Length: 423
Image (cartoon, rainbow, N blue to C red; front, top):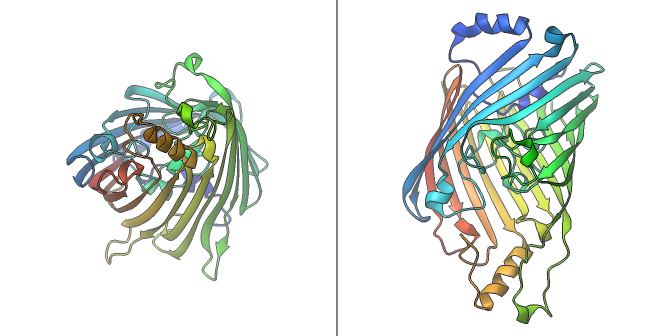
């Protein structure tokens, strides 16, 4: 494993290994030899709130993704350059909104913040690797949270995919299907050490919902991410781990979340001037046993992370998560994967203060807010079953504590099913 560069496979966001239609293999090889390969995937999530929350009921959302890769060396003679294009269709409803009463955290992964679109243009960028994979660059329209603060292990969970909510919920950290103009340089001086950094436009996550209307985006600044990743092989059994330390600075000017303060309170509390946002994160996972395969997913992992955002301008000031992802824990089911994770979310103290002051002055809360918002937590578990190559069935369980980040709505119990399929 150390002799091969397996980091790329570790960060791929689709986990349904293999293909449902192996008869297409000759066609795939023929196309690949001529400079084109593709992957078509379906992801469906049906989640039902069975206790607590606002009401009992089920919501369904799905995602169809077509990944296209063009070898520009074979096609145009531009050796080493690859053109990537990702088209995505998302549709359905979000159980968080419909039945749980939660409007800050999505309990179903594939729901689109910007609404339905038949063909989102999610990514389109060119990539080239230099110096025996020591240097890599990509430029175009990219989704930051499939490059920074992510991993396949996080994407086995619904709430945390493709990055922790405290990262992906804020402007600047674009998330599928929202891409943004920019580029990343990846420097890899040794096998175990990687430095990524880049420059990206920062724009509202809900603008340009289709991905095609580039001129409609209102760019307010630039996002400057940097991530250092250490990927050692530890212990006598040489078990891989991934230790990520990241930082992002968004130069956009954001309004103080205290909001409009009642006139009588102005002499004691007043909004700060607009300021930029900083995000700091640590994400750690370490394999604790190897099982059934020579790749970085072939085993059981422990994982944890912490995110901190500038509290004056970030809805989530902090997030902490801890979990595990275990392969083959039931006899005679060597490729099944079990995961469980607890995540805690601390709201901005400025947001809480503004809501408290307005309520004390007799003013109404904003939409979907039923009290001063302070914190919430989620316990999530899943059991993934690979039925055939290219198809995974994954029953899921989520228990949300303090929906709406208050104690007004009862804790919600959500169960459901996730299906992953690759053509």
